[in-house]
View 1 (spheres, rainbow, N blue to C red):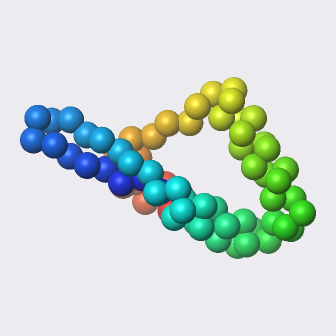
View 2: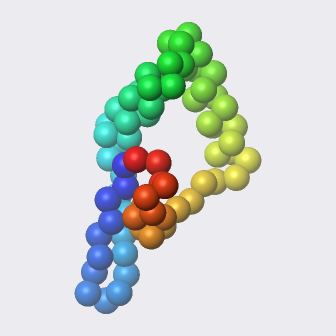
Length: 69
């Protein structure tokens, strides 16, 4: 997922670990018992949503206990 880097000048930088993110997505799909045949459809739906409006979040969002982990 995202890793936040704080700098002395007050700026922040976020980097993403794509392998970890993919692994967490697989875990969630298994937990929700999504059939393997439907995974492509799930990713297509996500791509459509992101194409319509990019989902953004902040470091504060990630600290929220209800934020998906």
